[in-house]
Length: 327
Image (cartoon, rainbow, N blue to C red; front, side):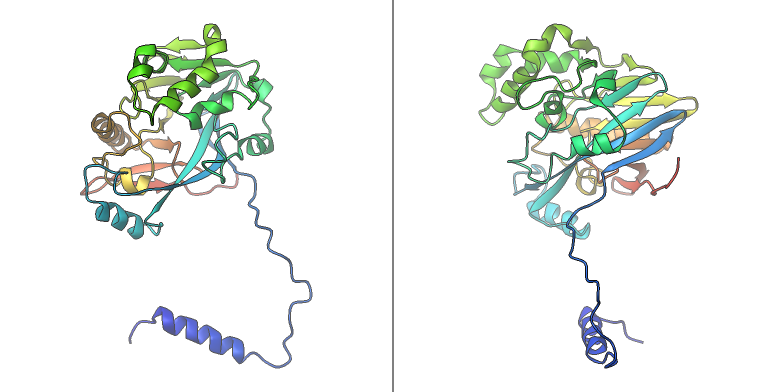
């Protein structure tokens, strides 16, 4: 028996519609399409800790043959097509993570602050989703920053420069701070990178004395340890979260789109400051996650941005978490 082609399927649907019984009538209560989704937050547990993923929308980034530097562009396009994604636009979601330890409310990365909507019109949903999840910015105890790119730090302040989490201690990695606050690095930076330096100074300059620096490897909150994950930026860190016998790895930007950089960890992306080092770091982190069967969270993974890493013959694969209605 031969298979059914797409043309056959569409043709049979049209015939069925045309042959509907004469007594059928149009719906009496036709509802207009809303164009809206439900609130974008998702909860799960790691031991006794309650984790809440907060969605901040998505950036549909236009890409070209420069996006991945060490493989032919057609390989990148094929990987995207094989994953049912457009071959010229890369979906880059933004997802912060709230960790409720029972005694502390810890936020890992602060989102875009709604300040990237000109670049990414589909972003800027963080505030509404944070509120829908039952949180108040005044109740955040600690904010851990993985690195200083705009989509991770802009949410620390409102557009007019006011602190959005007035009672939170802000903690950043020492090498990340040293790089972006170094005038010599700013002077030597390519023009395309200068806005990142200037934005970091806009966010941190007037609160510098209150920002706590940590060394990668330090415990930065109860049950949360920072991990050096250099390459994406010079001081980029991931976070290992442990409660009882359970643990997970918040990868931050160790890998962007999983269908490209988890499946092909050796691919070198234009978004990384040191692409070769980032690829080396990525392979080590994914190997650890696969070997230990750890739950992982990726800031740019498809929402709710968590799952497990499985090793394959050529790289790794992300197995997304299954939606659960209760914890």
